[in-house]
Amino acid sequence: MEIEVLSKDYVKPLTPTPSHLRTYKFSLFDQLVPSAHIPIVVFYDRPTAFSTKEAMRRLKSSVSEALPDFYPFAGRIMDNLYIDCNDAGIYYVEAKVNCSVRELIGKPDIQLTRKLLPAEPDDSSSEGGTHIAMVQVNEFACGGIALAAYLSHKIIDGPTLVTLLKAWSHTARGHPQEVKPSFIRPTIFPQCDKLSPDYILGIWPSALKVGKCVTRRFVFSAEAVATIKARAASPSFVAHPTRIESVSAFIWKCCMRVTEAKEGSRKPSILSHVINLRGKANDESPIPEHTIGNLLWVMTARSDQEADRELQSLVGVLRAGFLGINIELFEQFAGENGASKMQECLDAMSKVYEDEETDYFGFSSLVNMGTYETDFGWGKPMWVSPGGIDGEIYQNLVFLIDTRKKGGIEAWTTLGEQDMALLEADQELLSLASLESSPLELM
Image (cartoon, rainbow, N blue to C red; front, side):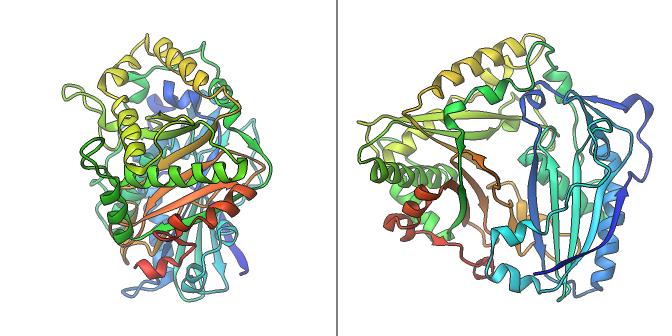
């Protein structure tokens, strides 16, 4: 697969940002997030009602039209503390790919998919600040399109990403006001000067690994997910587990079996799950669905060596962890005293991650968030790819995302090479999940 870059540009907001909005301070939650860019690649079939050239034109013009509502995204991050909303624009690349979109996703390859992402612009410098959004629109030989982006995690979490894509696609279809972002978080969760931006990186040193990691896609059909949910249900633990609880517990069980096979004995195991806090506020002061920025917290669940590791029991452990992230905890993070409460919680969390003899598995999810609802005017995505992990420092991670066919789940799983080899051979896992199957099979 060869990619030819056709143009590089900066797309600015259609209307200038008012002067009183020039500085956007990060919230307490943003302050703790490491400065990194998260990848996303969204694949579309070729348009039939108009040309691919027209589709490319609409994409570029509509992002400019949508940006005034998302004004910080066109600015630059300064000192990891605020955004200079200077309307410098998002980095925008157009490229041509010498194969068809179905050829690429018919046999998905994570490394090839990552090549569709934009390279960092030549004029990047620490003095000028960090880009928030970098986009590359790839036109395939068949007329299909892949929208690929790196987005700064300092202000864009998973729900924010989905809000941006929904607003952009609605604007492209001529309905710009249907998704309105909210920027209220910095007033509710004010920044704290005493909390180091790198504080959170020191919380889980035992969870970080150095070496060669491997990412694989385990694809669960809607029927497989229903089977796992039925097996996970129990009147003694959780009568009606969710898809996320059931699939997470199932994968955790398989990963713990990998550790036991490798080590020759059981080890304690910690599962962490990132939770969207947007639904945790009370009715009197709700947090809008399309609130922009990081509004996430981490739940942890533990399984000791002697613990029951059957699926129903593990789902019960997960449910207890999820229930611990409640309105009361959420409200304690708000206001001027929120930082001290957050530091107290983070200190407690660091104790969970200080045991080098414990296995750690981190889970995150975009399930049920509408990733396949982003229709720019020529149909819903063929496939949404989170891009995978690339690097020599990694964590054991599982990222859950919907399949295009309703009810299914893709589990993007990152482990060390030896662990992944064992997981790929796990017969219980393979009886319910297909390994690296084509998204075309689930359309």
